[in-house]
Image: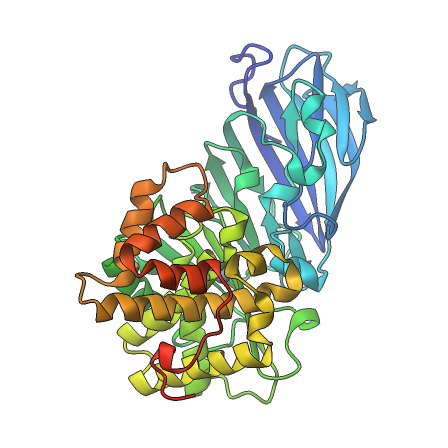
Length: 461
Ligand SMILES: [Zn+2]
């Protein structure tokens, strides 16, 4: 049975205490939530979606019912897109039950949506955990625009008895017993991954752990030691990552998204979780130098996201800053850690430059334009973003100013940041213009000037 917490202790209409009990099956979860406190006599229940995943939903919710703890049914009516009205005709805690069917469309791997495949399931809280409101206004918004309800505490307990023996649930949320977690916040902020994962420490002092899926095969032997070296290099540069503990969750790409050729990596950050995927075609030797270099740059890139955008939020027109800087720091921290040689760092950057040309680099226009243009220009903003960071760093170093460009820029941005409101392009341009020549900022950051090899310190054109 579901434990009932604080039943009757909270006056009605106060924030809820939620206890989720979850039974995962193949490609679906069955959920019962015990709600103590919270809205009554009418509760507006809704599910959200990732702002990036709107229109790409990989899950649907059905079989929604409500009852008292003793089992008497409560009235439930659908009232719109993934939204319900529940008549809470009890003064005690009550229970909402539903099923979430979770698919695996490849596009969703980039869109912070829950996914499942034969050997794992990743629940990105934003789309599978019910939210409870005391007024219909909140559910009037589209799922991607719905706010989170107020929760004083939440617990999630998983019953994995129907799944393979080696499956566990991993999460950055505090685990109070096997597969049981306690949160002080809505679980929609969290990630839970189910599968044959094992925890490993990356760096206790930095609060960084890994959960590695048994099927991960790209550079498996180096994975944790690379992450450790890269995290330490970045911590020396920027200080420890802002916030609490973080978890890197390593999952092999399912066959539907695995590459036909070469190696493919994907990553995203959600709360204090880094979701990392990789796959390779059968012909690729998984431990050769090039694969290890690629893995190191990828890990360095993703670890940097604990700083930007997770520790320091930026608005969408600054996506180039988040991605370009991550790419730049990924490569430079792999170099500093000694995983990449100087020649390897230059060669890999030169390859990035060639890709920039092949993609029609100038087509991106300004970085801000590429950040806002949508999916087809997205790859360009990573690579142009990185090249611009390289040029800014070289200019900073040539001017003989103290400290590295990256650490000084980070500290100045953090001085500007209030810890909550995402930074806007104006603030970034202003700070950059105090560090390098304003004309460099105008040409390369705000403008769409063509980037040349000599500017990158990579020889002649
Ligand atoms: Zn990134």
